[in-house]
Length: 365
Image (cartoon, rainbow, N blue to C red; front, side):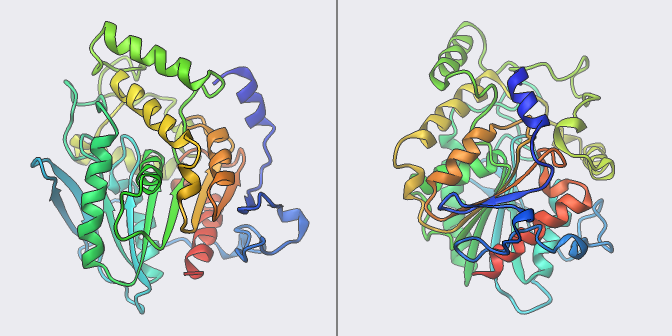
C-alpha cells in the first residue's frame, strides 16, 4: 500500500458502520437502530450478545459432516464439504465459496454457526486452490489463465446444488469468492437466482488501487508476455512452502484462529498455498474491469450484505465502497482498524458483531 492509503486506514473509525442502498450512514453514536430498509446495525446494542460456539472444535471435521469432491465437466475434482442438517427447523440452504488460497477448513466454526441458525450449509473450493489441485508448475503458487474457468464451475455447481436444496437459497463468498459471486450475478449466469447474497471482504479490486486499472492491466499483461505467467507475482518467503512471519498481520488479530490454519496445513499439506501467479494477477484485473462496466453491478437485483474492513491490506476498499453504492439492494457493514481481512476469523468482539449483522440480514429472508 502507498503512504496515503496507510494513513487513511490508520485514521479509520474503530467501530463498524452501515451504508444502505441509499448511501445513508448509520453510526453507533447516532442511536439509529436500522437503516432505510430495516436492517439492524450490527453493533447497536449487540456487544454483549456475541455468538461464539465455545463447544466447537475448530481442528476437527464434525463426524456428521461429509467431505467429498465435485467433478467438473473436464474431470477436475473440486473439494466440498456438506454440513449436517440443522437441529432446529430448517430455514433454507447456504452455499459458501472460499477465497484465493483458502480451504474450507478455515471456516468450520462459521459454517457450524450457520447450521445452528437453521441453515443447510455447503462449502466449496475453487479448482487449483486449497485441496483442489494446482494449475501452475509448483505446489504453492496459485495460477489461473482466466476467471472464466471458475465462473463456469460455479455456474454448473450452483445449478445442481440448487436442485437438491429447496427453500431459501443464500450464496456467500469470502474475498476472491465474493468477487466471483458478483461476476456470476452480474453476468446473469446463475439459475435459479439466489434469494440473497453475503460477501465477506470481497476482492473487488487488488492493490495498488491508486494506480489506474488500465495501467495495471497493461503492466500485468507485459509481465506475462516477457516471462512464464505461472511464476509467482510476489515474494512469499525465503523458503518455498514456509509461512511468512508477517502473514498474520494481514489476516486476523486472533492468534489462536490463525494458528488453527497453520495446524490444518500441517495435517493436510496439500492445502498450503502462497502467492498468486502473474497470470492470476492479469486474470484478476481483467475480471475487475468486467465488474466496473456501467450497468454490471446495477443489474444484481437481490439483497446483498457486504461485511468489510477499511483496514484491509489485501483487497481494495474503495472498490467495495463503490460496489455498495452501485448495487441496488446492498448494505455495507464496514469495520475499522480493529479488523483485518478475515473478518469471519477475527477476534471474538469483531467476529461476533459481524455474525450478528449477518444473522439480522438472514432473518429478513
